[in-house]
Image 1 (tube, rainbow, N blue to C red):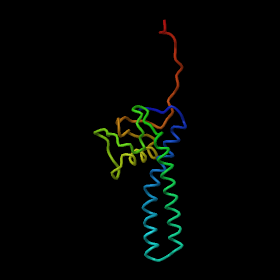
Image 2 (image 1 turned 30 degrees about the horizontal axis):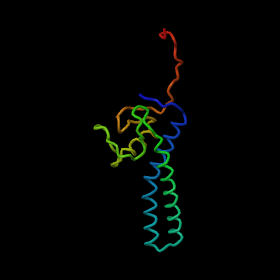
Image 3 (image 1 turned 90 degrees about the horizontal axis):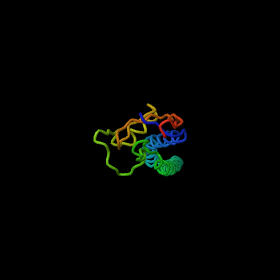
Image 4 (image 1 turned 120 degrees about the vertical axis):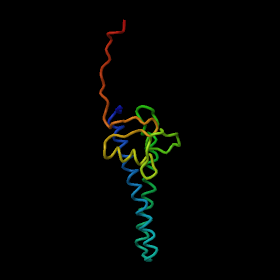
Length: 137
């Protein structure tokens, strides 16, 4: 299992994974609310749905900006960003998304399989061992 260099890296992974999962739930709910408000002719509900839609857009922009810095500790490819790289032949999807599978694994299992190198990584900080100089001379 590969580990991460700092606690802030782990926090970034978890925050971006939460944003990605929340967006996958919120966008269909907002679209459904918007369609329902048009069918019912409820102008107040339409304004609320448009406000929530704007919040989803802002959340997507934040997720997109932060996802570029969620790199696998082995292959250094952004795991939660859409970058169009070739995936590992054994990588699996969740609802057609490699990123969503990694995000769900990060949130619920506290580890994930990189879809690019297919190596497991655990959401822990690696231990820092001081280097010895015994074999130096």
